[in-house]
Length: 239
Figure 1 (cartoon, rainbow, N blue to C red):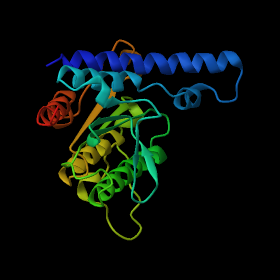
Figure 2 (figure 1 turned 90 degrees about the vertical axis):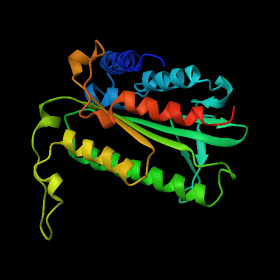
Figure 3 (figure 1 turned 45 degrees about the vertical axis):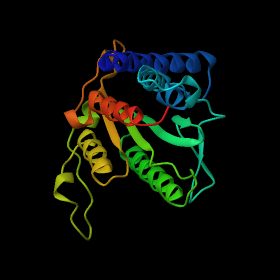
Figure 4 (figure 1 turned 45 degrees about the horizontal axis):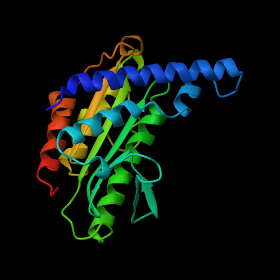
């Protein structure tokens, strides 16, 4: 199989490079949408990750005609809403085989964005699996559903965070858990509860990330395990 770590190292470097370029462009243009927000709203940051996943699929024998990443062809029907755009799909002869979501979060505001990210990921999975149950994707076997998150590795994402408990205590694993730890728990539980087939969590410090450096909080959420899950699924599909 392709060198997975090298693929995602390049994707991490692309992510930070694109963010920096977008921030510079907005500031030079004198737009209000500047700084961190400019980078966050500019789009395209995750294209390196999508390209990495596409490369893995091609290396595993998936036809380029079956891999869909453009906005015009990455939309699926939902159950609770008409449609949902995914970051990458594999559709073979009218059968959905794979759907992938890739996200990121950087500081300084981790609190509200953490809630938004988790609610979005859970809602997307619920919508897809309910639509699948109702026959929205035909009579093919269940697709592989993947979720990947890149989190900025910094003091704010690593420090302990308390939780409000006005009526009931939070679950023990969340007490004083940092946002990095909360995301780790979240990604693990998404798979444990079978909302996603596989999840991956990458941490990358802003400056070091420009060189493609990243870390993985645990092996179960590493890119190698993620890639192996994906490849084993597509290898078992008709071609």
